[in-house]
Image (cartoon, rainbow, N blue to C red; front, side):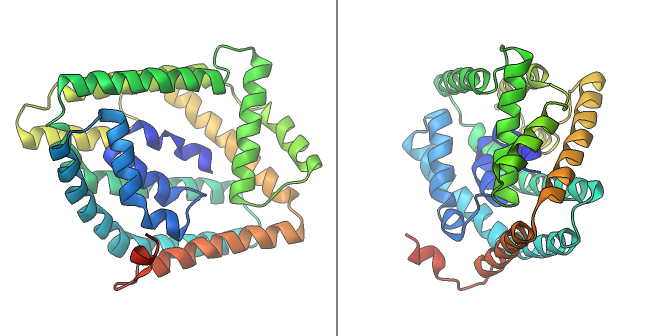
Length: 298
């Protein structure tokens, strides 16, 4: 499931840091309570903000953060409880697709809400800061190529993907034994290999973002609409052939998650179900008005 969400970091950075926490399997109350600090650090790392921009970002992010905590987290909790109910009898392909679609829907809602503030911040970005962003991307792109073995052999790419899948399954479901890992690795080798296509799409999105920034001095309302479209409609601009390949690959991946779920022992399933319950409980706790955990966590 989580693999479908990794593209979040490729979208506008104002929302990326928060979205990564909101939908991540590494979510904790402490992490959410530090979301503003993480978001500010992330945006500064990509753009090298000046003092005025940092202050403006903090003010705008605080509003987004408050909206998300009190308006969205209760719905997230219900979503996780529904997921728990669907998972009790074992996952189906439809359950995996439902979960993935639900996560993407919530990311889109967050992106649309964040777009006006993101646009206001991006309108102040200088040419030097755009160069800073490009250098950051260059570094991350080299890491992407290296870790995903994009230029490696088919076997190397398959091995790298198998390791990522096993990690994601263990994060979402439960720790796996050696035999289970071997079986999942074998299934992963049957998945379509699209790492080179994904890397090309990554570069296309980065180029589209630079094109977006070239309009930052135009009418604010029009620029905000452009930012919202880029953030919420990340599929736009893909070729029909690539989208077809992605759809097929995700269908196959969903089937792999179902197969992994069926490998779980009774004890492993209890662990997985308890994790889902914990996410729902954490969302509910964090959404309580007057909650003092944020202050206590600092």
